[in-house]
Amino acid sequence: MKNRKVKNHTFEYVKNNSEDVHDEIGYYQCRGALWFDDDHDQVPEPGLWKAALALTNDLRKEGFEAEPEYSEKGWVEVYVLTRYRGRRIEQTKKELE
Image 1: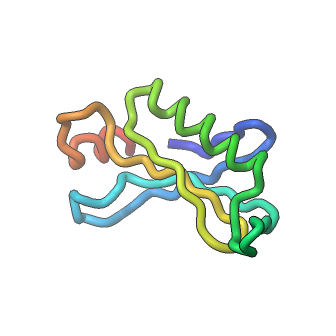
Image 2 (image 1 turned 30 degrees about the vertical axis):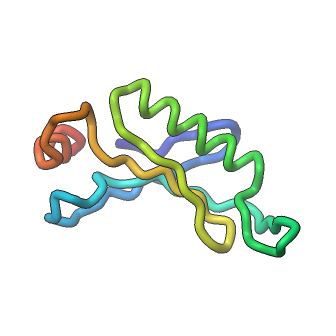
């Protein structure tokens, strides 16, 4: 998989090299500005979060199971869990190499 540009945000693909078949295949990441909600908790930059949701949607249309998440310091990740339900993760990892 390659890096992807979605809504003017470039998501870097990070491959998971773990042998644990219960781990995700990899994930896309992008860092945006720090935003805070009314309780002063960190939240993702709105435009970046919309881009992550669009990337998640694109991946699902391509047959992947994907989940968007965000973490501290402006980071947003879209985890690629597996391709096509019912397939073994090891097989999917080989297909993505």
